[in-house]
Image (tube, rainbow, N blue to C red):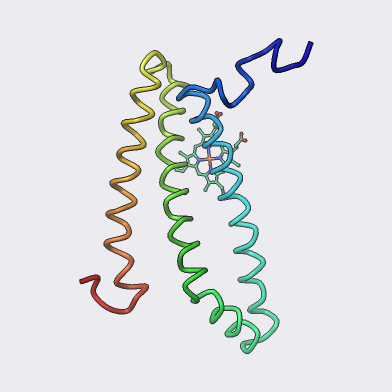
Length: 130
Ligand code: HEM
């Protein structure tokens, strides 16, 4: 008997909110950790001399990397707020309301993400948004 037949819940088609939240927390955590490692590697290139650092900084300011930066902010805000939700469960708070808390915290994440964008985009673009 296949593993999926024996344990149908492990197939993504059967995932409910809690399982998707669990998976999203893993992916966001590993994504932020990978970014941190890449960030340290890039910053350490400053030691190779000003010219190589300036070159890397110039490519990091292209629209592609700015878009990735914006996605990174969203991922961090999600991981932080969903992390607070998980910490509440560790304290025995809200376990039976985990689904509602997921949507509540994700809603707050979206609002915090948009507020952050309104604040930082003018700094990134060097001009007011509108
Ligand atoms: C205020 C900020 C943060 C909060 C509240 C938070 C919260 C948490 C919590 C509660 C867990 C455990 C999840 C569980 O046991 O089910 C976790 C896992 C994790 N976090 Fe964070 N975190 C934060 C920031 C970060 C940052 C900055 C990084 C990366 C540099 C990070 C990377 C990870 C990773 C890799 C995991 C493990 C994922 C896994 O188990 O596969 N977190 N976080």
